[in-house]
Image (cartoon, rainbow, N blue to C red; front, side, top):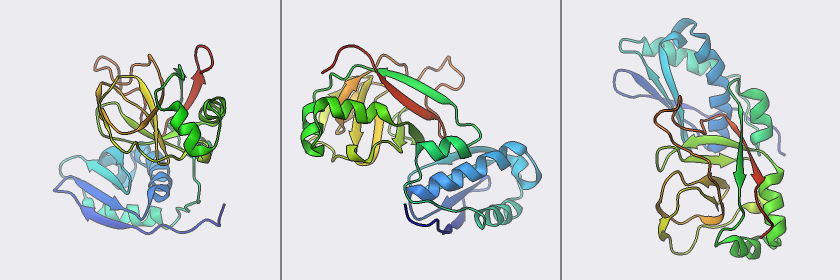
Length: 231
């Protein structure tokens, strides 16, 4: 791992009740998100008006109460960002230590996916080694997107970085567990998709009667466990 670096940050207004924090990469998002959540939860000073913190691939969105002092919040964000250090390879293990709301979610998976053999071929691993790699390290929820309940997971075994399928499927079943690039994820509902599907789970990713509705929220740590027999 290379030495920690400082954070490059642009702060942009979003209407009258929000700020968009633009950074250079996902590692910066993870570090900034982990730093913001405890001060936002403290409800002190200009942070008291923050109602939601929404990370994405290159941004963190701060939503606020109407009438919030966005100038004061901008100053607070810049002051906080001066102390944020970004580590290369910032993953699930360090996220669990730094994010105050990082609870752990266990997801049982049947590793019966149609792309398991292709992932093995891409990585040079056997199918059993792919399963061991996917379950052997924790993942962190970096951000949500694509569909309600879908979470982009990072920080797993780097050997599992694989390209998306050359042609997406018209429909991927709900509960499909996939890999694409540096991410892993679980399809919350049947939808088109081009991720490499390595397994299936019965976990319910989105339930409007649950609080919060999403099983996987930013900052959470996810551990996949194998369910059923070997592939």
